[in-house]
Amino acid sequence: MDAAVAAVFEGYPAAVRERLLRLRDVIIETAANTAGVGALEETLKWGQVSYLTQQSGSGTTVRIDVDKASGLPAIYVNCQTNLVDGYREVYPEAFAYQGTRAVVIGEKPDEAALRHVIARALTYHARKKRVA
Image (cartoon, rainbow, N blue to C red):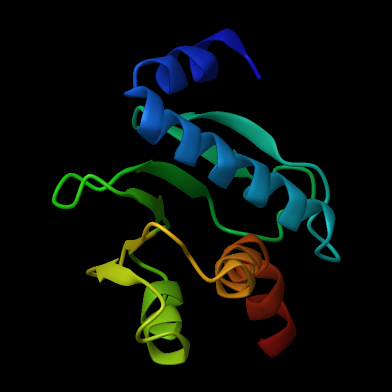
């Protein structure tokens, strides 16, 4: 983890930081276990810790931060995608949602659903290419 990313994590209260670091681990593990994703680049975008599929180009940027309304960790994706609408359709009760841009993660998320949501974002562009 580079110093700028570490500094963002350090800026969160301890309880939130712990949950965001766990979410970070889930993102990295999911990428490693999802065919075609390859290595992730961890960086900052818009002040949020972000994960890019630079090597493979398979997915959209996944950002993590705290949802301002609830104070809970959230996964943010490009609002121009249909990802959050799809998540809402498949997992209407598993998460809270913020428009077309965020999945808000509750206290005890469904781990399988969370990994599926992340994998869908990390393979978004690859799936679009197959359909075209």
